Image: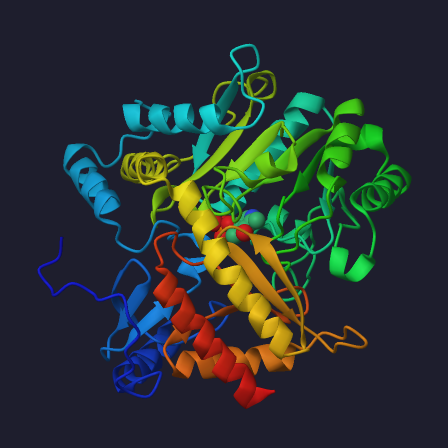
Length: 446
Ligand SMILES: *Cc1c(COP(=O)(O)O)cnc(C)c1O
């Protein structure tokens, strides 16, 4: 624990935002960090706890992004800090592929226990890496090895990372892939289910996706279909009921590995450990990262043993993958999911936050959709008649909320969605405060 005064869970704006010290730091940063590494809000953070960031000028900013769904159990969570600190003093690195250690095994055990479909007859095994993109890369590698096929299928509006393979899998070329080509080959992008905009039922949308993939990719050439059960960067798009089970069935019938990319939606975020559970699908492989270790870098690839066991010794791994400190932090996250009923807390957040957002929708007709699950919620802005995306309004609302000390983030292929990824410990009172700031920002900017 730091010797500094505890951070109160409230908004407090004491300078303009960014303040003078942040602006000074930003000038230094601009000289030595390239603009490709862009910061949404160039406010420099000194410390943080639970839902509040304290910047170098002393402003207290309410964080409704959690570093994009990473600090799901809150910033500098006491149990995570204690577990990481204890592990730092024990062993910080050996390289698991040289000499192993227990925390890695405990993380693998927990993940295996919580994947829907895992039974003693059908066990799941886990490889640990450092980032979401590495999880996706390894999921694809493992699926190719198992099937002996090359093809990778993804859905429109998907986001899977910024490495060479994953940036080629994303829906948007800009900013992730533009100019960094040649892009990776054998990737087919198929229509997703987007109830607001396609008006299709789940089975109808699945039929469209399947027909497209059969025509354009050819089922027998596909190693895997990689799907975010709730799309993250794409705008928290929840597929229509029946879409995911139908495409998962089609994958099974055609020997295609169904990979659930739960990097953003997983780890208690939506009210279950993995969001795919809520869609009644048993994935062949599920990917975790972001919220798994309370802010430390860690990623998991958890798959059916039969698939995972196909890779030869030495074929999988990496120097830092499954770092012991990150694993110890992850175990502390898992323990809190259980001991503090964090799944129920995600449902509490939905109960407090969603009706308040629906209240805004009733007030402002440019909010055309309120959607999401648990503590993964979003509002989409568009022209109410034509549904033309209104990204400009989203930018203005986010900028105004920042001035008031609320950190918001956009999403969506057209930037017209505001997404909310609060800590599962954010109080109802703080949620109400955030909604009142958004309300005033929309009123001022519309
Ligand atoms: C963030 C994200 C990734 C990439 O994770 P990194 O840790 O940034 O590499 C992959 N998939 C999804 C769904 C994500 O949200």
